[in-house]
Length: 291
Ligand SMILES: Nc1nc2c(ncn2[C@@H]2O[C@H](COP(=O)(O)OP(=O)(O)O)[C@@H](O)[C@H]2O)c(=O)[nH]1
Ligand SMILES: [Mg+2]
Ligand SMILES: [Zn+2]
Image 1 (cartoon, protein in one colour):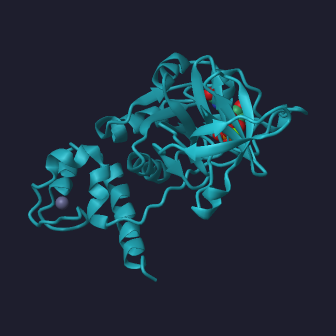
Image 2: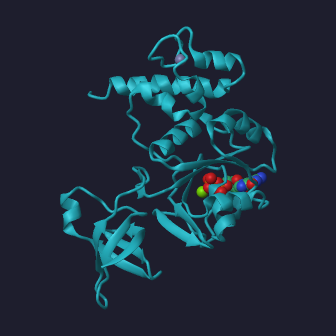
Image 3: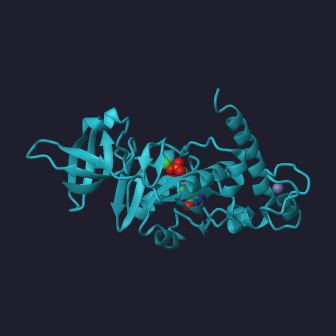
């Protein structure tokens, strides 16, 4: 039996990179279907290689460190959230992704790309996330600026890039990994450029990246008790327990320490406003959870 990691999967066949750095084509044992477990790209597995032309078998899947449903991938350890000067950032989406990443115990980094076009995005990002324990990086994928700091953060991690379409994810991956992924500049799309159709794990120059097809949003299951939402906001920690009412949802309760901290300029007004939007959404999902 050998150990390896699934780097690609399609049509019931899994490509596994073994510890010996060779690739093996495998099928999953029937027991996984009985257990309703589907091997995912990123899964660490025990396997038996095939003999000759025969495919081998995935025998066991090791416990997953993280698991995403859409796209279905496992064991991402660093979620790199990309925003750009243009298109205008969807910060609510960023907050949702940050929360999802935290639920999955992933590390996060916020990449402000297209810094060659202007500083607005980086200013907003620092204002809203400096206290939220999210590292913020200023990057220009096109000019190759800020990439060293990013590479440094990616060492030892399995990174997935997420963010709206057009922010420069593919351009970033091309610059980091010397790939030839298709980018959004139609005039420059050449025949033969690589379009991602399936999730795959790419390992190059000591960097490991989960490349996922045409997706911009990672989806996590997010039905949760609204009382727990504040736990995903590290910058709230010092104020919890100081609200007049317990429990306090930090919505519009009187005497809320979060509201006070915003008034005192200690918390970002914009981020707390978005927290309240998510609070409403979370309450709604929580009420409907047995429907
Ligand atoms: N000015 C500028 N444009 C960029 C930068 N990075 C990417 N772009 C452009 O933004 C557009 C979308 O990039 P793409 O990588 O396809 O975005 P994706 O949809 O997130 O994969 C393309 O036209 C890129 O050339 C950058 O750092 N500066
Ligand atoms: Mg792309
Ligand atoms: Zn409160």
